[in-house]
Length: 135
Image (cartoon, rainbow, N blue to C red; front, side, top):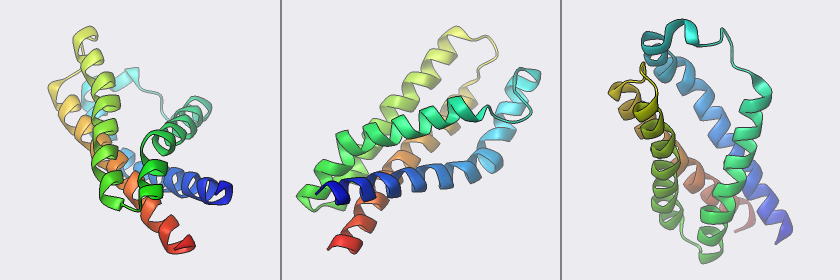
């Protein structure tokens, strides 16, 4: 069981980080550049980003992926992952929209939707791949 949990975590984190790294450059960065311009670093600070990715994947596995994996249902991981993603990214986006002058509704829509989809796919993908390995 411990090996399965560790593999599930590693796969979920790898999917989340790998897919997000591409989307951040292609989808998110141009929108944030337009809205925030010189407020952004030229390149991300890796330590805070790493802390976020590792913790987010851990919480996702504990709250969504492991229960879905033990129940044997990828669909559960998908919809519950979407729910957690919408909550987490919605908190970030709507808090920023309510407190930051330069935050835009476009950022909320694109990044919030992306976070919801990314979280759902990472949870479901981790469950599916772990099931293939240990099935």
